[in-house]
Amino acid sequence: MSNVVIVIGAGLAGCEAAWQLAERGINVELFEMKPEKRSPAHISPSYSELVCSNSFRSNELTNAVGLLKEEMRKLNSIIIQSADETRIPAGGALAVDREKFANLVTEKIHSHPNIKVFEKEVTEIPEGNVIIATGPLTSEELENNIVNLFSDNNLLNFYDSAAPIVTLDSIDMNKAFFASRYDKGDADYINCPMDERQYIEFYNALISAENAPVHGFEEQLVFEGCIPIEVMAKRGIDTMRYGPLKPVGLRDPSTGKEPYAVVQLRKDNSEGTIYNIVGFQTHLKFGEQKRVFSMIPGLEHADFVRYGVMHRNTYINSPKLLNRYYRLKQDERISFAGQITGVEGYVESAASGLLCGIEVAREFQGLPPIDFPNETAIGALALYVSAGSISNFQPMNINFGIISPLDVKVRGKQNRNLALSKRALDIIDNILN
Image (tube, rainbow, N blue to C red; front, side, top):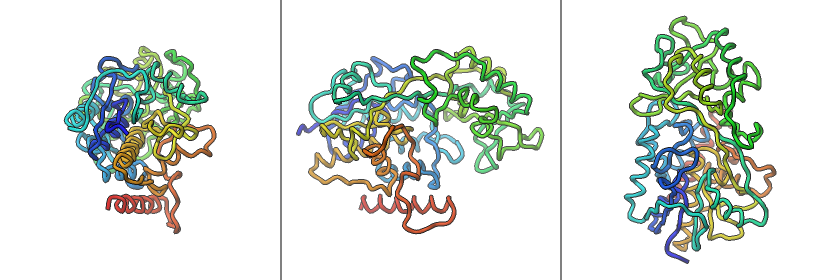
């Protein structure tokens, strides 16, 4: 066995896998094609670039992704540690300054003595121990080589999208207001209230707006958590009001009443100079985004520093191909990590890299695998991805539904989720001990 592990891709999963290996004394060669070459969704030369939202979602232990983050904190995750260090206010969510976050991860990776970085594209799978963490936008040449690993074509696709970002000083705060839902926590969100007439006019403009061409786009291939706002609107006139435009728990200070609908914006950097429009992933043409989104009260003169984009994501049919350690069943020197495995979300991608790095390191050290159980979020995610009985495999976020239920009945969803989280964290503590 070579004394080096090659990690391909310095996204969230690749950096996490490299970090876990390096922290255990394993030499890592990390290959990243940026800045020489970039995918259609990437603009920054830094590693672990957040191409969609700047939020890692809920930090609460009543939420499965909050549990997953806490497990990762205990296991010395570079991604969660860096997110905590570059956090910006976002209520109960863990949101980050996306530029500072990526720069911090890049700095930590470059400064680790056991990680050697090569900024060049990998087009063929190398010999030796390899972790492929190239993400859902893997370059065409490498993707073709990955296909050649499999006896059948086990590459699958779905579509993902990103929301627009506007400058704070271009938002009309005479119409918009700062508030948090139900006045819980700090007023971290900008809220743009709509009355019924404004909402219907916006809805009609949105469903008739012109889309940008996306090769091979089909609505059923869109990941539900990133559904474009215009696709959501076409499902029914009130669908947005039960989704990202939900007004519940918000009161317009100018009227003292709950608005008919509310568009929310969240900080995108620590200085608070730019905000992203929450839930407004889209593949409308840029000119149409400017025209339609400027109908939102307070955004009439918004300065769009980034428009929403949509791209096709590729992932492998993991239940057929991978074991619970994210290793290729037919060739265990090769592991996969990140969204290419079919996990969905920033935290889930990093978690797969974390588990992958830990288990490969243990193999190098002659130690048995940890076998994170289904009672933990990390283990449940790996077992979902590798479960051979799954038909029509689709990307999925972590959720309590795939974690083993409690042996005793606990009344109330919140109490039950907290009990599940406590059990999982106790198991992680026992593993660490």
